Length: 79
Image (cartoon, rainbow, N blue to C red; front, top):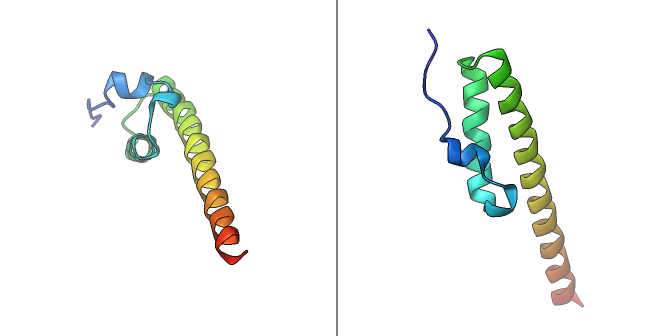
């Protein structure tokens, strides 16, 4: 049986630049859950996958930047 629950349209259409890391991570988790449940048709699943890829890259970039900043701060403390 197919579920009719969907991500809120405004969440799925928000520009990445408008999202915090936490909002992007939450939206990504919701997309993964929907894809794992299999309650999206093929076209919707493809759109969800594409949005998920965008969110994953966004989160990965933010984490990489935070990691770099932490390493920089650690070097300043040591130096």
